[in-house]
Amino acid sequence: DSQIKAMTRKDGGAVLAVDDRAAGMVVLLRQPIESAAPSPEVIARIPRSRWHAPNHADPAERHTGSVSISRDGRRLALLLWDAVSNGFGIFIEDLDHQDADAPGAVRTSRRGTILPGSIAFSPNGASLAYLRASEGGFADLWLLPVDQPGLDGEAVALRVVGAEFSFSPDGAQIAVATSGREAAEVSLRVLDAAFGDTALRIPNGRVSRHSWHSPTNALVFAMSDGADTEALYEARPGESGPPRLLQPGALAPTETYSVSPDGRWIALSADGGRAI
Image (cartoon, rainbow, N blue to C red; front, side, top):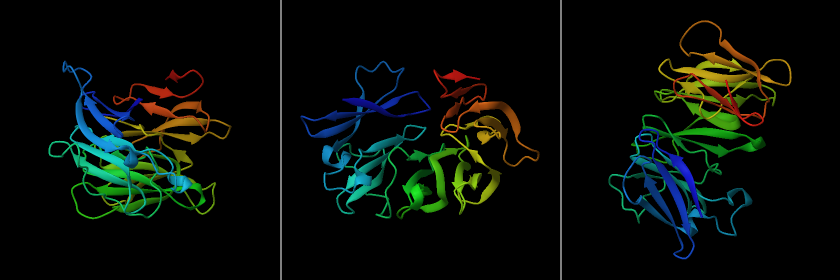
């Protein structure tokens, strides 16, 4: 069994998690797609007991580990079972100096379930974003400085809707949709990725994981158009003027989208998949 868990964006390489049941290990392999190397590089060996939650775990914790790799391919973030806290925790590894058989110290405490698949490095690799489950079916967005000591980091957005957030191409901002006291009070917020201050707020907006494009640092977001569909808009935080309408009625509220880095294409998860 093997799964591609993360992609480096710099060299097009892939990290694969291979579940070796006979050896009792999950082996993480890195292979640049264009490399002529005969075999991938082993970057970590994880005991299966740390990749899979034990049977006695809380139902919310009964999932497998996950992995995210920084854009430059130098750092790895692992969501693994931590026996001390009796829950999943985040471990950050420097691939230039780490021992494949010895993951480092945990960087999070037992303050709520970390959502699997939510961990993501900022584009510059300086911080790691992740989501923790909170009351009412929401999640809270946390930012953890990679090179600074301490656990957990800071919660920069509460009551996140849709379990999605998106870093700007330069890593300076992060877009996330949050709910107010009433469930219908949803706002798209663009936050300063260093301090969590709100730079832009848009009512009834939402984002996907890949919502920004460069070099203009523009954000593409979805917002209800008054029917049972959502329109796609573009905004440039820091510039005056209303958001620009890109495509009316582009999405149903449950569908997702992804913006190409150059901003020329948007892929939609509508029936059969399409691009605009």
